[in-house]
Image (cartoon, rainbow, N blue to C red; front, top):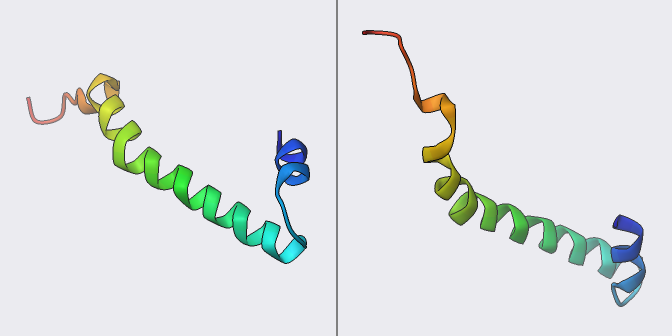
Length: 52
């Protein structure tokens, strides 16, 4: 997957590094903004038994 992405990005190596950094930041932002909050209620980590 990474090789395919690297080959399909335009420009010289410096531009590719910047594009990969922007893509990684965008994926992380989407995960922390929409994906993780949507999945959090279904995770068992919220079911604590301490204090009962």
